[in-house]
Image 1 (cartoon, helix red, strand yellow):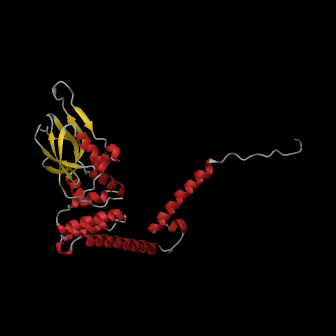
Image 2 (tube, rainbow, N blue to C red):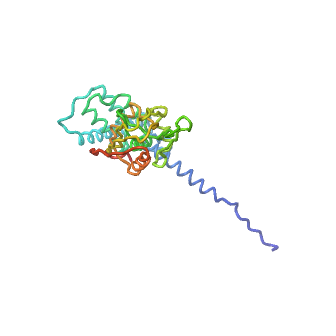
Image 3 (cartoon, one colour):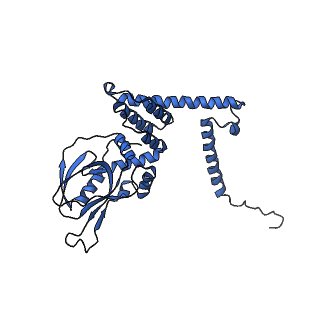
Length: 295
């Protein structure tokens, strides 16, 4: 219409407010972390204007936190260790332990470090410095992954080391030299342990670098097999059977012993179903043992 100015609608800005909010939220997180660490002065201009005073304040706060962390870990270890069984431990080991443990703030990880301390008080020299170094490099998420792997580990034969069974290999019963052996795989991914998690454990040195294969099992000769607190006797129906597995490294074995055993019932049933067509399975009596999971 003549004489009227045409109203112009603003350009669409739908994506911008969301992006702006996201950026603001991210910046807010960074600011909060900076303030928590005592390094936010240049951001918010709060606190002393003197750099040396801000440095002292941050160090004092960090020392308080480290003191609190150590007190919690020692309290947990004391509560779970029979006083009459505790022994003197090497002061150099203790100094190395406290240097690392004072930085542990996560409650679940403090539980784990208290178990390490308890074990060393009960059996001095049983936890190596290499194990402490490995644990220091582990994040909480990586510790959870390893705990899952330990839940799915088993033992068989006379070797008491923990193993993660990946397949049962079965040669053809009548023509083993003609037909390719069958691999009956364990779907670890169905139990929250995908191959990517195994790679994490390989990188940490908690399991050995490659899959191993057991010797061929002798038909009619039984061997011990255990899953956590459940122990069995397996007697092969036929020749040509072997286990394929990942084996925990010595350091992984040490840490696994600290974690204790915790069964995963659906996984136990899956393993027994896998073995049943090829073995006579006899259950043996055993006593349960468990520790809280890392959450």
